[in-house]
Amino acid sequence: MAHGVLKRAAAAGQLSVRLHDLRDFTEDRHRTVDDRPFGGGPGMVLKPEPIFRAVESIKFEQPGEDLPVILLSPQGRLLRQPVVEELSRQSRIVLVCGRYEGMDERVADGLATDELSIGDYVLSGGEIAAAVVMECVARLMPGVLGNEDSAVQDSFGEEKMPGRRVLDWPHYTRPAEFRGMRVPDVLLSGDHEEIRRWRRRKALEKTWRKRPELLAGLTLEEEDRQVLEDLKQAPYLPVSSRQG
Ligand code: 4HQ
Image (cartoon, rainbow, N blue to C red; front, top):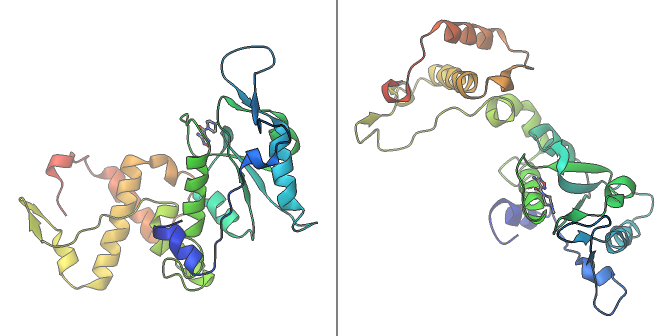
């Protein structure tokens, strides 16, 4: 919260984050949050009671509220930009982070409204995953990245945020030549229409070459379809011989 997009979102009054220590929702002298797994095996499992109590204490603040309770777990649906957009429209969300081997399955069955994974790899805790969700959501909030109102986001959706469904175009800054590598001439030309077409073509080309599956579900405009047709004809250029 002290840096970057999270700090900006908080400063803009768009985001506030509260941490809830599960130990504060225990009732025993040792403030126990975990126990050994039924059926045996290594490691410890987070007990259900402190998690239910913690989330219920948040629900109690606004009775009747439709409050998403999101569990971070490798079994969850993958966090993609449409999920981030959906979350950014919520006024409050609860992110539940496990530790140890995991948490009692009854949290997923009887408390969580959704389960999200940030990717197919194994973390040792859900906190980093929750931080990823927060970062992605915060950067969509009005007034955080210069998107003063949310309409800007919609109208410029595809064009200004190519990361949404196609990959970003290549970026360059000075110097115009660095260790023998030239910035493409078109970017120095001042011809804005030509630059726009070049960027769109590069974005589509990069997506086609590196992440073709991203293009699968897209309905493309005529200009884009033409560019892709041409690309599919063109010979593959190795990284070392690319220019322009
Ligand atoms: N976890 N995306 C938390 C993950 C994970 C992921 C493993 C969740 C450990 C305790 N969470 N448990 N991938 O790897 O969200």
